[in-house]
Image 1: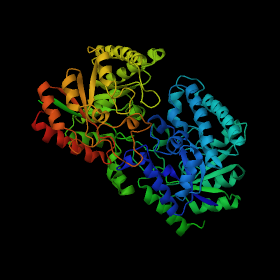
Image 2: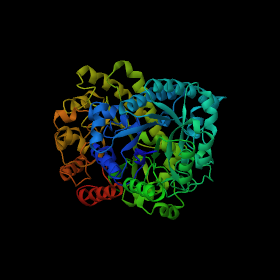
Image 3: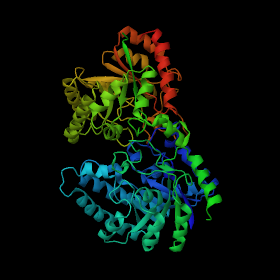
Length: 315
Length: 307
């Protein structure tokens, strides 16, 4: 299995000292060198159009940013290769940003930026495009207020958008996978039923921390769905959701008792060796993405991940 | 009673908690200073402790604020419990130069005023048109169109006890060439000016002369310093120039740059300005330190001239 490091580790959304550096190009140029120095030569890019709206093109997370700063995807890839990153293995789009206004607007934006993300992934030579299939339950319920079949209608129309994006991804030689966060309508095993609503070939993104928080054993889930595995995110958590955080407005930040939901690899309670053994038993031999989502200290997370791989896992 | 009421523009990125009650336990999860920057309760405490009486909110934070507090009124009441008022909000009057978009721009402006009114704020700082790149240069007809809709937004604002203040940034379509002209095209009964001290210098205008000339129109300040002045066209008209590739900072805390802020304050005294003065620390790597540095300068250095 090929080890990849997710740049979703870099939290751009929340306040912390020195966060301002992350909007400048120099930060990313150096970060790629440091990721390579930690032994990772492939990365995952979260596709975040949010930064386009404020002209933050120093953040290389969209087609627009890359075009503004590098000219073309090809030149961007040449630059990151110079910094030691050989490939972008996967691109992840979470459309939650657009979950406001009305369903038509949301789906329109999802489709539009989904297509952009696929073009970005194609230009980067990635193998996989990952889509978050459902924003938070709280957001969807707000969006669908007043609709008698709110969640059902939301999912059925979402399936059509995902089908359309899967067709485009297929034409571009990309595998489309669905991420099912613990705060979304498709948390845990609910994603399996949704896959049946989709008409196209769509795969699962196995995200271990999200599955565990939703009450699903990741190793058992892998064993039961091995034909549908498209990509794997090894994420860790020590969080137990005993306060229904998954229903809250900001579910990654549980309101009743503050907690850092996602932690560095090896610092939580996800049985990662068991997950890797399950993947091996399932015959999975492709990319595993290490993601210390929204890290408090990117460089420490990076080295802790490498340290864990060296000491606890055999690649 | 001070003539100057000190506020701070909220450039804190998403603040994910209303209040962290398990602060000590949360600290031990990571044993770092991150937990000091994650709840409104502490951030508002920092405002008061550092000598601020107000906060200017940002429209891009509203979704999260409303998710945490439910309504603008709940946020305002929470801030008031900390001794803090909402002084104002920023609003981008995108496409105001396009006559076909008049109704849309007017409605967006009215919506922003209604939102600010619900938060109890007084100043809606508005940026006309968009950035220069992709829009500029603006002709007289464009400026006239923009002034027309902004006058109407201003009239609605005044009717609701709010003042809109034009806010020119050095990379905006209304720029060095025409920002005075544009101000003069707007109706002084309804449209005021938020003087951003660093932006005006970066545009290449004379801060002291501008204030002295338009003191009657200036309803509030965005107070910040800069170590740059009179940026060339290729910078002001360039794409995405607000954040520099190499980490160069356009903005510094008052007193850390090169602006003649003491001389400005003599003029502020001369004109007897009374109202909100909002420190903007955008680009600072440590907002808590920047807030304190800025407040010290306003109160202990400028305050000796006029407070």
